[in-house]
Length: 209
Image 1 (cartoon, one colour):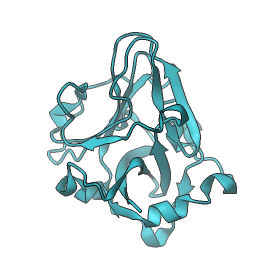
Image 2 (cartoon, helix red, strand yellow):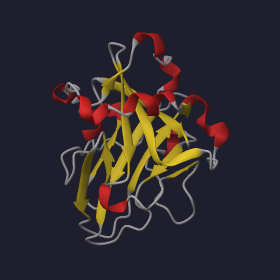
Image 3 (tube, helix red, strand yellow):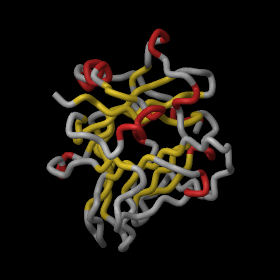
Image 4 (cartoon, one colour):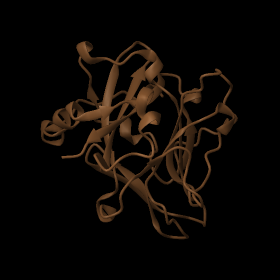
């Protein structure tokens, strides 16, 4: 992951990010107490914070791709009935963030991060379109060794153009969960235990206006 260092953000892409992060209602260390999420949480976008091994933290805004903004995000624990189950369930309980609930052959799949769409045409009937977040309290080994990050989309694209977090508002280490990302249909599949530079992510729910 040496080539995934955050790039310097363009100011116009981040004019609203700081305010959205300020409105974050809870981070992943407390999210499960609020699930299923209430109507007071923004169902259109979330904050994803990642932590580098040297302690730096960066924020990204995740939302639906531009052509599918009418579909709300699914944020729950575990996944709803009929939704694809994550791979690393050996790690225990998890938070499930789903983008496209109805994926089929050649349908558009993917996510939007920091103002950019990461989308592709699903190559088969695989319905995976999610991020899963595991607190992994028992410190178990993940069951997936697949690190397929160069599929039809850049599943690590949310790191690019992310915004550095000030030292005064850094989250403690235990807020960062093992993260599984799975799309498609040849979109990509990876788990944060396979990443060399980033230790995990923390999901933030944004307060609805």
